[in-house]
Image (tube, rainbow, N blue to C red; front, side):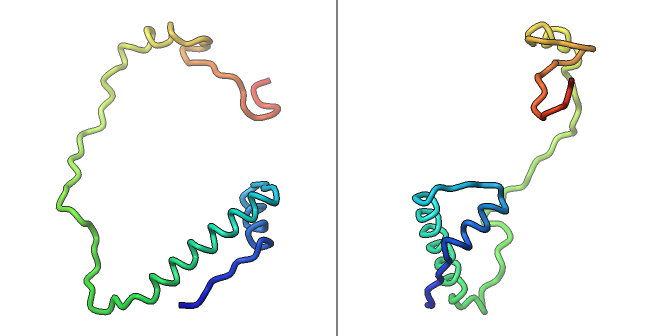
Amino acid sequence: MSETTISQQEVAHVASLAKLAFNDSDLKQFTTQLDSILNIFETLGEVNTEDVEPTYSVTENVNHLREDVADNWHQKQALLKNAPLEAADLIKVPAILDGEGE
């Protein structure tokens, strides 16, 4: 098994791509954790699975689906009475993006 090593710079780069900011302590901790995870994947890659049939499901469970039918339309006015703000028969919520809803 070869040891994977990922640098703190690589972790910081991936974090910046994900718009995350870490202090030095967190960066060191996440680098260690990510390195351990990558080592586990390398270990799994060494397992001989040549004669193993693919497993698509581990159980015989079957999804039982129902028709998607809305049946609570008569509750709209009662629900709107509980909303803190209401406009045009809809629940009004504060804008979450700058410059929106002004």
